[in-house]
Length: 159
Image (cartoon, rainbow, N blue to C red):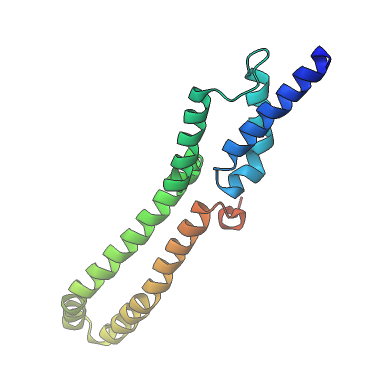
């Protein structure tokens, strides 16, 4: 067997080894990144290397475990920040609802004492706000979930 044939067989064996380890990563990550990662791994392999090194195996498996156990960590920082802000928006809306429930009686009484005809309008307005709040909270949570999963439609907006 010629020297070139031996090198080609060794390269193919090394590639198979890398592909087996990359199979540990989530499928979506594999679809988007496997070929690029494989190319980098093969380009940085030592001259004549035919097996994946133990340190490389450990590093690649650690990365796969991190992506499987903590999928949010695999997202870009801007996406994680957006999801965090959306969850904060939902939490803020819950705080608003709680505040409205706690203070509604006193607020309606104060309005009724100063302007009795406006008391009905205040009651209707508070009722609409309290009815719409679960929808707003649901939208915040839904968008956070979708952005966390990498759904492009959840990032579209004006501008």
